[in-house]
Length: 384
Image (tube, rainbow, N blue to C red; front, side, top):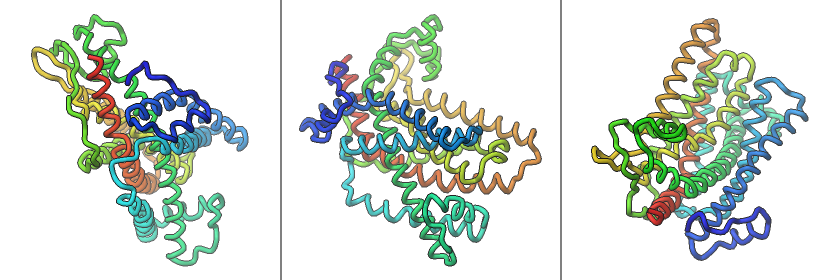
């Protein structure tokens, strides 16, 4: 399979053939990739169009309002796209009977945790989640008992879980399709580079992205030879979960421990935008995880250089340094900030980030990791 595979048109008939599934899983995956790559620009356009429609309909053009509309519009469109991707993607390494019960248990457990934290430590946070969302949920009744409050939180978390699950499929399918199609070209291009700064701007950008040391005399790029077994890797799942969680906390610290946001947006708005961003966080983490899984490395006379190490360094050092400096700056400039509100916002986000990180990491590890890794290994090995 390669770039010569026939594309898939964006019409109902062809998508129907995807649903029928090709008996050859590699050919089925190639057809799904072609569909996803062609559909992606339409998905982005639909998200922007929906954002504009929401802003026009609501008449809200404030920065916070537009940002919230943009975030939720992308979530809505990618959730719909995720339904299409879920129906035709790989079935997964685990039997649904083994993981479906957790989908029933986890939201209730997080609801109980939220209630305990909110009711006994930070009542304003619980009040915000119980009443600010009330009208659109249809649950603005007399919440006169602990059971009703926990039930309301549980229902909301079930909705959040479904949305995150579908968005994760949309985002990960998009990422997997583009990686299987293009990453082999990137690795071949790296193998043709000179590491002396005399290449084109594109070459210098690639060298910077992968942080390839100047002492490395690039000969070629190699990947691991052995394909992965179709098993669920708990170690990989846990590592991805931690990475997505940490990166999400860092980026949201930069965005939402900002007194300007805190003064102009409600707690609910901040959490909604943060949750929307967290659903797309795998797009920043999976690329270097994939480079590590596939064993992508530069061969040279000096030593092998693994590309994932450079990507991780580029990503994390930049976000950590910039986030920390920005946070210190705003604390100095806006020393009159309400620290209690900052603490409430941050605590609420930490809880929900853990919830969404678990879901998106599971979706990738169970449904996409093996197929993505083996697809890249097979395609790149066949083209060398």
